[in-house]
Amino acid sequence: MSHSGPPGAQQYSDEELAAIVDEAHRAGIRVAAHAHGDDAIRACIRAGVDCIEHGSLASDDTIQMMIDHGTFLVATSYLSEGLDVSKADPEKQAKAAELFPRARETLRKAIERVVKIACGTDAPAIPHGDNAKELWALVDRGMTPMQALQAATITSAALINVDDRGRLEAGLLADIIAVPGDPSKDITVTQDVRFVMEDGEIYKGV
Ligand SMILES: [Zn+2]
Image (tube, rainbow, N blue to C red; front, top):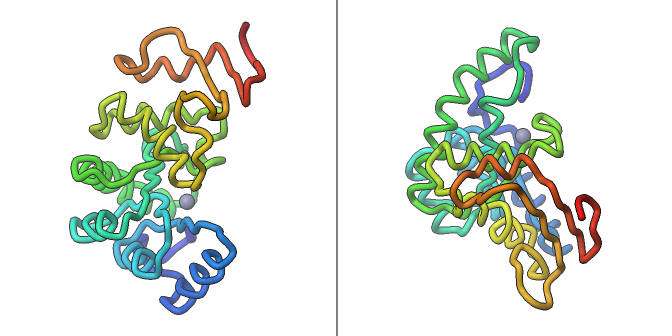
């Protein structure tokens, strides 16, 4: 997202990454890294970063590294369709034009090879509230609707290291939404949330 320079550049040194991960993990905090470039993603995985945000240019070998290290991927793939770069500087528009098609292909491979993919949107690039569009993108890149639902629930809970939500089960937080239709058949119904319950309290619908 820097103004110029190659989209694949690694901007933190290996030593800086190691220090970030070390400090965070000792405090019980997980580390996510905004990383598009292959070298940068590999450096993050080696340093023990828990989650790669974007991961756009990850090579086949790097995807394998993610699997071996159990690194999560939040692909933010809907940026391809949803981010309006028409008013951005020409340098950034050129970067986006290079990056997005390759990012879609990378995600397709990561889905095929079963990387741990959680759901995120790069908000506010895709604003909070439009999260469900990422589910559509995940399905468009090769997930089944059920896999996309799991990415946004079970896998996302695992990513933030909590076991009190992400599944509908007795004893867990009652964080529930309802949509008009069967999201396991048509994922786009998740964009029309009619009912919201958080921790047992109804915030929308009846
Ligand atoms: Zn980012």
